[in-house]
Length: 375
Image (cartoon, rainbow, N blue to C red; front, side, top):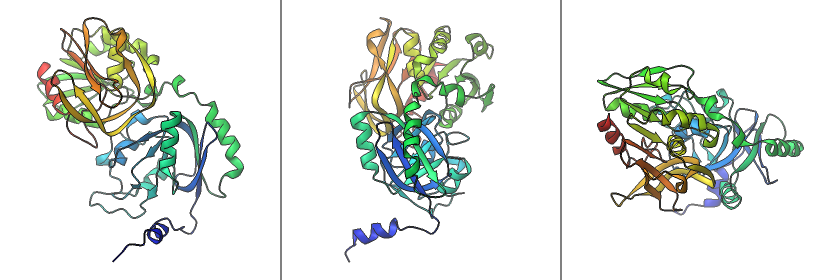
């Protein structure tokens, strides 16, 4: 029996009664019409893409995606529904969601709600039925750029296209402190253990906290703007500088506070890696289209081993500014960018990728073992 692909796709994308229309407009004037799902709303954000094949719940609820309109390269999204157990924070942080095909009827024993319903409840607009390959090619060729996404109750949005373009062009992503928007408001403790660490919340994923709890470590999560004195008041055995959204150059004060904690073991993750690098004298720069996905090869220079990593960042460390007491420990095998640094004498190290590996792969969870052994 042969599959008639054309008819199969036609059935998969057939229009439902009352289906909304949607529009994605990039700041260079390119527009993509499609079908709407989630909330009837209009949002602006930086257009980015991820290559993850699974884990749309983790992506949508990752605070590092704050202020961004996310495109999935994998075509079928929503097929296993939504469960809060799979989420990396208490809410969705993306401004909008762009996918090829929407599954309206998910199947999974743990699924509580459909993707469409959850996005509607959280006010996140989505667009589907467009060629996401074309969106990704545009971002790869031109770089990440501001965009505007809208889902319409009536009409196709053609009359609003110029206004949406103006809104997209008015956005300056690098001038907004998204870390302030996603961080906790007060210190909160998670788990119990013989040892205690402080995690500075620049936009933490729950998986990082869970990995330390699994190793018998109590984690005190403090706000992004906690001072070194605030942190030391908890008498921690070590510090985690976690992931988060936005431009690290806006957080030079946080790098200064980290420098005051160099007498303690410190583990930096993603944005935490960049802030430690700034504390070490280096600067960061914006990548053309960032590293986002679960298939990035990274070389551990000391071990001469390659790990496949999960990543979500738009900036990278310029190694030229690192002080002589620091070294680069990991590099990206795709573009040669810095993926990890360490102090030559002090128990301080950091990686640019996500070792908690949600949604995967799990190659780098050993880094939590390394840090736990330091404290």
